[in-house]
Length: 237
Image 1 (cartoon, rainbow, N blue to C red):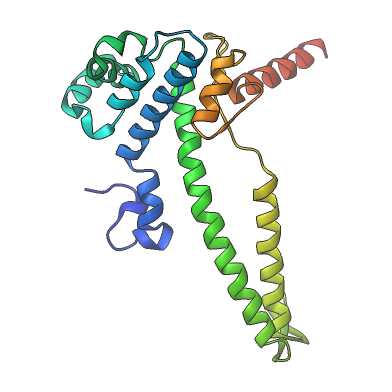
Image 2 (image 1 turned 180 degrees about the vertical axis):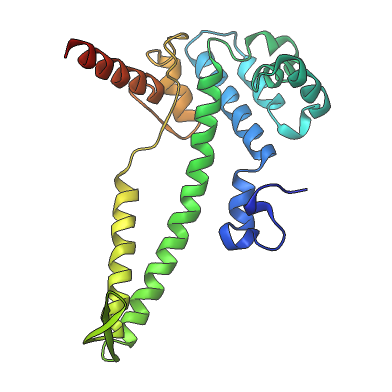
């Protein structure tokens, strides 16, 4: 039975859509992880870090429908780890190339970059819908540019305005949102200091193959760094 509001049969579409739910579906999430593993292998093969032909074998195996999800479920119950069971199953499916699956990567690298891919898909839906909404509002504002109505302030009637002007303020807000979205960077998280992957050429190539741009340093590392600076300042003061 569904336990989250967006999955409710009656109320789900009040807070989400079938298209958006599909982006964050469990199987979609697993496929994005597999996509990152395949992109990483392709980048590493280009750089001569893994044997030729390895990336093709891994990419061929990196299909969520090919996974034995029951085996993954049992392994997950034992390891309590989200990526290890997936890596083991992918390595099994890849055969001889399986030893190079997840080579040099960490759990954070795969999960965070996979999430970026999901967010990019969601972002594309939101951008499309925002454009449609903005155009519809602009048309509505134009049609009612001379339609007089009572202005309101603090829930009380105020000086007269036009309905077109009111709708124009909504349109302007949509345009501001659009401008904010188009200037914001979205990147991969191939950034674990443990793996030292963020500074490697394979990181940048893998990110490009996953259709995301690499971040200069990981978000978690930045948060830890800021926290360390704050703690240091507190002790010094």
